[in-house]
Amino acid sequence: MEPVGGGGGGDRRGSSPADPRSTFVLSNLAEVVERVLTFLPAKALLRVAGVCRLWRECVRRVLRTHRSVTWISARLAIAGHLEEHCLVRVNVHILPQTVLYMADSETFISLEECRGHKRARKRTSMEAAFALEKLFPKQCQVLGIVTPGIVVTPMGSSSNPPQEIEIGESGFALLFPQIEGIKIKPFHFIMDPKKLTLERHQLTEVGLLDNPELRVVLVFGYNCCKVGASNYLQHVVSTFSDMNVILAGGQVDNLASLTSEKNPLDIDATGVVGLSFSGHRIQSATVLLNEDVNDEKTAEAAMQRLKAANIPEQNTIGFMFACVGRGFQYYRDKGNVEADAFRKFFPSVPLFGFFGNGEIGCDRIVTGNFILKKCNEVKDDDLFHSYTTIMALIHLGSSK
Image 1 (spheres, rainbow, N blue to C red):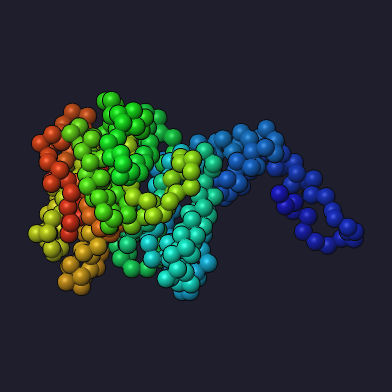
Image 2 (tube, one colour; image 1 turned 90 degrees about the vertical axis):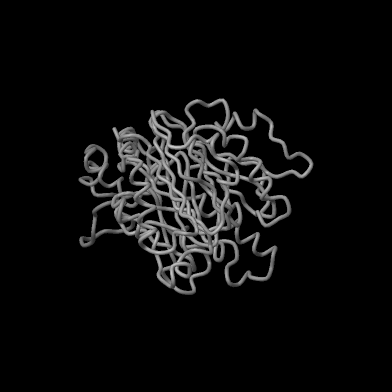
């Protein structure tokens, strides 16, 4: 670390030692050290924890203050800045256990100089993914996907107006710390034409079967334009869709990161990924905005249905999974209609999501003692949609 104090002046020769007063302060006054450390990214905190016992205890206290879900978000700020995705240029100040990030396909996979060259696109995608993963500690589970468009709440406050970014460089990363009483597990099933059936233990290991505390599953199919991919996605979802859980997600362009994988990702593969959320403290609800929802009035009516679920808004995240066919063109050249409607009814809940190639979900509420519509009453045809939007709320329990 750079010496503190010891400005200039005086007859000094060579390198001067640190000011004894500064050394004393940074070695003995925990309040000062703790304040300084709050400005460091999480990975830097882990490094400086080895300086001395005082600093180690200060690092622990700083990290303990970052136990709520937070996020980083970004969009293109400087035109022509192509050497790295804008999301990679953000420091991470908490120590997450699980990270879910989404970035736009156009710039995350195929930067300008790489268009038209499949091998170059693969390389660029992996380089961006690796750079983003370096922001997080090694023990962190990272799931990253790329989609045609992004829905994001700017950093700074959960009350910031969410933005529907249908075109242009953008992305976000949701950072989940370790939360008492809640388990978040990533899962990944790769389509193998020779073996489409999943083993029961594969589902059990990631909390999708034999798990009475399972409450929510975010599920995403990638590279679904390939033959058999959509059927495989429906097959995977059908293995756990008859339980009383919230299902929400959709079809995305590609899988970019899954750090739990032992082998490098094949960007040309087809599969299903997602996160399972388990814990009795979790409450959740989803609503479906079908093709009849085509103006501000009907969009707000859908949000009223979601509001009626009475999901607590503190420590709650909103998700929006919309078809690329919706957005400003669907609403007669008026942008941000659905995100604005969400903010009107949920003023303090951050909203995240994407514009993708198909949506998964239905109207449903799951709380501790009430279920609006049981999953076994919902057919597969009612879970998979196009030209729709799925809005979801996930409440992760009251903050302690």
